[in-house]
Length: 115
Image 1 (spheres, rainbow, N blue to C red):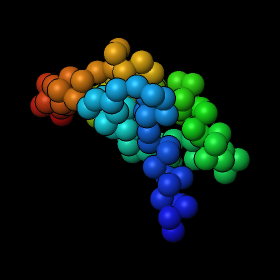
Image 2: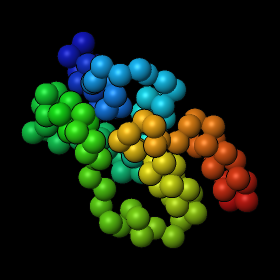
Image 3: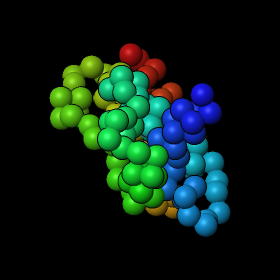
Image 4: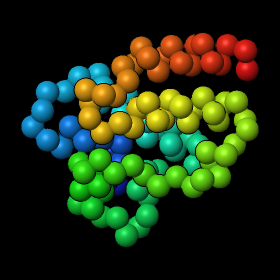
């Protein structure tokens, strides 16, 4: 059970968590982006069985985003569109360029108000 938990958690970590850098709320924003990815796709980021914990860590640390089929981006559903925007704001490699939690909150409040 513990091994699965550790592997699961690594899929949601921010790149700076694998480096010796100061951490801020933006690690949570990055994790939110991965949660949104899971909501949209129905799978965990880097969920392929061939991705070991080491491979997943390497991909995250190097700033690779989980694969997303083009069909998800082509959705006309307004909720999907907002989720994709929030995911894109969240899954930014450099924490300095990543949205703040408030920015994602503001996106949800303003864009989901009329949906």
